[in-house]
Image (cartoon, rainbow, N blue to C red):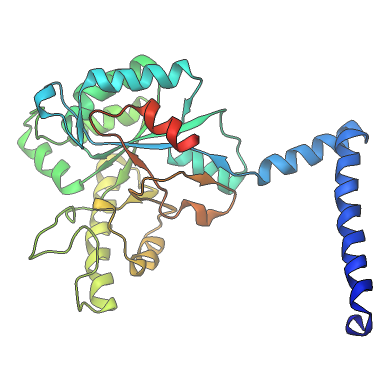
Length: 297
């Protein structure tokens, strides 16, 4: 029937409907019943993406001589936390994002996520006391095999040691630190091994998925065995991603993944937005203020 109506009439009908919807929304928001205005406002807010900067740290070492792209000093981290607090930012962790997407739980105003990759001992030595001081939350993604190794060695060296299970439990018990899976032992990159969980050249999908499933699941089982907790997010080593990893991670129960793309993160109610959450690396010589102001500008 609609195809028999002249084009100009069809266009006029579309215009009239659109204008009616726009006018109706304006009337409710500006002249209508207060309860109706509140409903429209709430729906609009729920549909609007949340701009959420995600910062990525690695090693926090007191020796400035070691500072670089993936190492900063405790003083630099303190400066970042002071700026975030002074400017009204509130830290969130992956569980907060899941609650927002899956249950509609509101986020705090000006949310920001602080993440640490690899699980260095100096995160416990230097970063954890600062998180306690500022009462800020963070996400630490550990290489599980390194935690097993240093738990056995019980060797706490600021420059290279990794977190032990007792240290992880203490940080978890504080309510300030959430832990996630950064693979069991796939945080490697050499000619003879895959880069992170990237796919090797010529590797079949079945062989690839079997290899990464075996490793990542081992990490999950160790988490459960040692803490009673199963991580909800997988953090890609080196930010290396293969789409063939998606079904494996979903099968293992992960509801979010963290990437290393330096771009803004727009959080919505769509669970798909939690796949490859982008993060900004925080190197030596660039502050969180500079990173966030550029990202949000």
